[in-house]
Length: 445
View 1 (cartoon, rainbow, N blue to C red):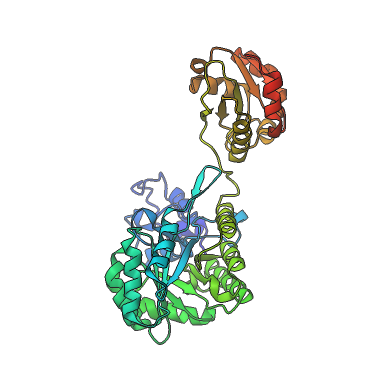
View 2 (view 1 turned 30 degrees about the vertical axis):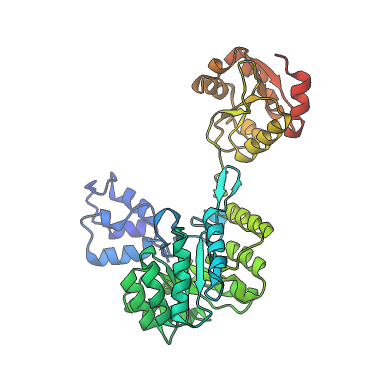
């Protein structure tokens, strides 16, 4: 179990030397308890204390990096079982699978899709994570050729190499070993050979066993061989088995009851027989690397949207940067509409404004991601904030008029905004869908 701040403090030297960057040892202990400091920052800790504190204060699930370059992804380093307790940090890598028995043109097409396809939602570009190449042919030479085909696309995508024979992995790593691929998988029969390859090329390694006890034994075997970056494949035969095993692994890791299980989890979505459902289940129930056949357009949007939602901090809504945004090409007489920086509010209003074909300005004020109604109730949206935002973002230099349209839910502030800014305030509709009609009927140049 994780130590509390006072338990950690008892193990510290209590010098209050400030060499760790904190004013007191108690402050440092509180940071260690929250996972916000490293024990190595204290120069006076004994090796025994470092060992105890390091095991207790580091995240219970190891951080693993897959791939190199701009498209690498990190998984692990999670600290809670449920996202509402804190948040989930590292979204799972969703990886498209190709087989080495496919034609080179098919392999290249899937690679280009992962490389180039982007789905934009609430201001964020969502993409798939990498390419998995599977050695279904059983030939090391054919496997290596398929890996080379992927690399010829110059995608530099994080690779996942799937093969039962270590010799096939060795042949493929000649082509992509420098890209830090994820190797699948070490088993009780081949773990020594797979560990040797993982060490040689600096790759993370998937270990495969059908029970938590079996995975824990494999972790001990592989770490004894010198491989620390591991991913756990619980080998589920169906969705129910994955749900049970992944939840067990997460619980035992988070509580540190079985620290050997403190690694990210791997899911082969196609092996369950219900691929789309498996991808969704993996996203919400602890899979860190999800391998799937290429998804349909509908499943693509659904999976990327679900992943974005689950891995958004529930205590920190998605926010837009405050500022003055243009819709179309507004001139000096264009209307100015003020709203908050809650991303859903921004994109909803922007969409309706674009459909009106009326060029205008959107003044986005910083309410820390709260919606209009919530911001008004919490006092985050005030006349002073609006006044300061008008000056900060130079709105007066962009238009000759002094009229400001505010959301309907902000109507209680209309008089105070007029007094604070000197601008005439027009109260817009509560429903953004009515903004077009409002502008056509109420806006006067």
